[in-house]
Length: 114
Image (tube, rainbow, N blue to C red; front, side):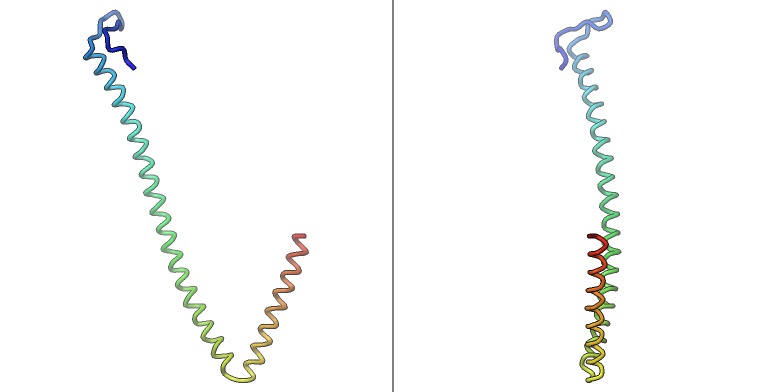
């Protein structure tokens, strides 16, 4: 803090008004520096939020296309299961094949990591 009584600076007496003005100028400079830092942070936050929103919009499109693909696959699978005895036999073979594939994959992964 500044001494508000008269002070000697470079051999001249400074009045209280000059000291207050000097102190105010110093504080204004400090405040301007802090404001510029806050402005930079605000711009960084804005940029990051715009990037995140673009990323989320892209993900929404990907999920909707995946939803359409899965819906079509489920319809075809339901038609195949409900269409007759031969298709049911084929469906059983597919399910058994997937279970065997899962077991083999699990065995290989457990051997590699263990």
